[in-house]
Amino acid sequence: MASIKKVVILGTGNVAWHLSFALFKAGIDVVQVYGRNPVEVKNYAQRVLAEPISNLDDVLEDADLYLLCISDKSIAAVAQKLENVKGIIAHTSGSVPMNALLPHLNIGVFYPLQTFKKESEVNFEKVPILCEGNSGPTEAALMSLGFELSQNVYSINSAQREKLHIAAVIANN
Image (cartoon, rainbow, N blue to C red):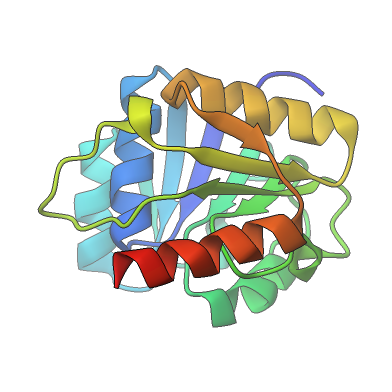
C-alpha cells in the first residue's frame, strides 16, 4: 500500500479539528471535510484548504484515507455509507473495534491517545498515536502517517487499545 497523501476527514468535533490541522501542517492534503452542519463544516474546511461537504454521496472515491472522527455510535453506520471508496477507512475511537468498519477491504484505527478541546493547542509531536490495520500494508501506511505527526506511534490491537482507553479515561477523570 502506498503512502497516505490525500485524506478525507469525516466529522467536525474536537478530534477532527485538531487532527485535520495537524495533517495539513505536516503537508498531507486534506481534500475534503464532511459534517452534517454546512456552516460548521465550512469553517473546518477553510482552516485546511479542503472542500466542505455535508452529504456522504459527495465524498471523493480516490482518497488514500477516510478518517472517521465521529461519535462511537455512528462509526459503523457512516462506514457502511462509504460504499465506493478505494482507500483505507479508519476511525479515531479508543473503544470501538476495528471490525466495525467491515466489510471494507482496507480498514484500520488511527487513535490519538489525548483529550482534545478546540480552545487548547495540541503539540502532536508528543501525542501517542495507536494504530491498527487489518493487513500489514494497511497498518504500515497508518503507522507511517502517524510518524508524520508524532514521535510516539505504536501498533496495537483492538483489545489492547480498549484497555488503554479505559485507563486513560480513568486517569483523566
